[in-house]
Length: 398
Image 1: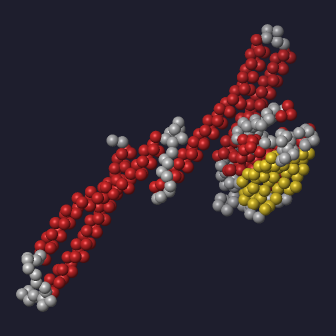
Image 2: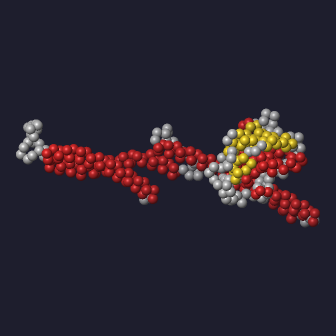
């Protein structure tokens, strides 16, 4: 007999005893309520002096001792009846719970499509069933996303590794390879290794963002954007992109490293997926109880039904745009993860003339529940610390 069966029967036994005790207590109360008044009436009538108001009828009557004896027998008989009724009621009460337990037990990682399907919410148990169905749906989505992510990450890592191996094998197989040839092969190998390193850094940034926030500092988004832009103007000038900003104070709370990673990836995405002589507009502002960061860029026309796909890992609508291979399809996925970790909102729209407009809204002011400088466990974020403890912008661009 398994522990689950013991636990289930123990619960039914406890409920049965509770119901039986209630039934038995009710029986005792009824008998006491009937017998005590009769005993009081009998004690108030003197022996040998029948009540003048007594009504005599033919046939034998019931004496008080007989009544008390009958009540005692009734109480004894009520014990098994109460236990039986309690066991039956407890079984009926636990029947839906057993069905929920049996169905939940067969649901596994390979069978997450199963649902309880208890119908409309009629009581607490059906509400529990609906809650479990929602939980199973989220688990299924998480498992599917994890499998998809692992498959894509394996593919992205395998491609440069295969190229690196081929490069080294060709160099070693050439009997006439001279110093210049080997040096060139080493330089290409270093370039491929740098590509893998940046990809791993982006993956670590994504994983750290999805882990959540444990450090809450008060910061100004305008200052964060200024720091990121200072390191991006050279890249924008080389590609002919005009960077324009309209920054007003926008004070919020969050992890400075994660928020700067969000800003860096938004700006990098706007520069990378643009066209020559394009532009990028960055705006920070305070709107009531929220602060907003908006990044708008020119670029190719993006179908509206393809926007959500961009926020999933390794998703690119036009890979290797402008002949560059500096993106991995992780930038907007990191933005989405950081947004969710800070309980912010993310709004994206495709511009009719081409490009995107992305707005992230954070809560205004400091975090009300957590103290400032609460730990710093984001050392796993593969970025170097810059001024004010922020990461060097661009180290985790995806």
